[in-house]
Image: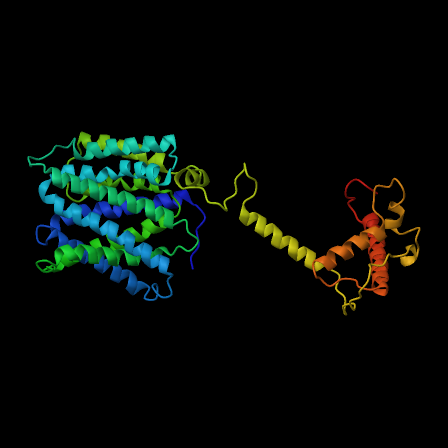
Length: 431
């Protein structure tokens, strides 16, 4: 099972920018294919082929998955699939520029939902990145002009609802990526299959239309493998390193890659809207890259109970590790006896001072003098015996064993005293 990876914000930012570039490259290809294929059929085909691609690469990725992974994958797939269907249906009632701007509003909806649902605190520079991203989205869409097309309020509301679903998808994926059991590959395959089935419900009403030519199949292969399979896989891994809100800002840079593809492959002229929008998007991406993964994670996600806090001291996990280490050390230092002494009823005997061979040299007897501040050996043995018997643990039970234990203790103390005098460097400043 995969665990939570160590935060690497730069790697996560690169992966999320690849997602934005892969999704941005799908826009001109989709714009070309929808003239020959229905939008609903195209969506269902590309997502189902993407899920099939991942399953062919790793056929056993779905074996032995926990129930939680299946539930999360299906929920994420339904959220994104419903959003895709609503956006596709609303395209007939909105200009493409207005539709693109409404979908891009997810960059603003994401921090608002994070505040409402998770009570997350968003850093000021992330808010600046959100504002710059929205301004860049406006420059790429609305500043380039809106063609004469009647705007349907229902279609606009459906597109904004799709943007809200995309934002919820980003937040939920960000929370799932923090779990101890996180399997991004299997989760991505389940998502893509669910999205394909969800969008296929809308497209199956009048039958599924397949591409009729080789070039169309090549375009569909790019949309399925690069844009969907690799794009969603990179997103699942990227959001494990970058919090949800900066992830939304980084993935909102799709118009930049759409403009680059339009200029390079379709020889579109560079206008002021591209220059202004590209500059604003670049500033938003720089602000969105986390400077320190720990700080941004704490600002984006609720604090976990077992996480260490400077105000509360070490976390529960650190205390458990310390207790295990202490138990191992104590078990190594424990003096083991071959035979357990027979239990003996009656009052606890008191060891005589003759328990040590040389009473004067026994450190416990020498420190038990009046005013020495240390308890006597007899009192320590008596109290230890009572404690051991109270806990029902094996301990000294008769006079002979107590006497032997006393002698052993004296020998240990003498040996420890000799080692302390001979060891170098001197600890505690004593000689």
